[in-house]
Image 1 (cartoon, rainbow, N blue to C red):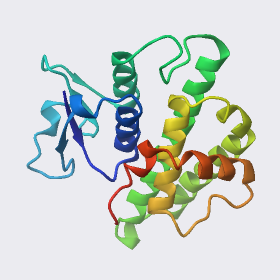
Image 2 (tube, rainbow, N blue to C red; image 1 turned 60 degrees about the vertical axis):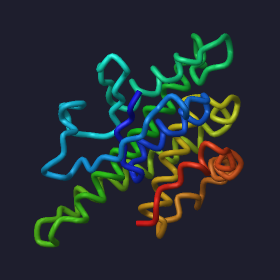
Image 3 (cartoon, one colour; image 1 turned 180 degrees about the horizontal axis):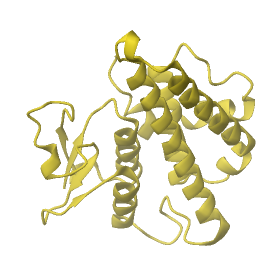
Image 4 (cartoon, helix red, strand yellow; image 1 turned 90 degrees about the vertical axis):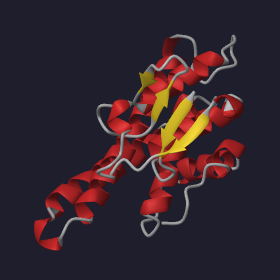
Length: 203
């Protein structure tokens, strides 16, 4: 398999963490890809022109990150061993945490892209809308931190990647303030090798 990636993408980091967690490093070839380059051939593997994209051995390509991580987890599946609870409330909780974390990344990236536009073209209202969405979502994670800590799931992976992205791109804004339970959970789980081994390069 071939993973087309950018090391600064939180969605890629989520995929890379699953690769580490599931012991698949020797089965995935990493192909660094600049999705913003006019010369990129990425659309051949993902018509959306985004990373991550996973190209299987038969040439099939999978995108985006929720599809890729579920496929990777299925390769090393076993009762109770995977990152996805099999059924019931625990499964929906894990998927909900993943959706919330991915949404944090969506909003943070939109805010950053808007902030990178020429000042006269920026919408401060749009940027504030994204900041508020992230803040509300962090509050929801704080409220659900107890459930988050019950078992390490795909939701846990996604939340770690999202919080790591906030530290990476918005380190001047301390998401930990007023969120002691989420902060304590992050401090404990961020010691995992899958997280420490996927730190993005300095901006």
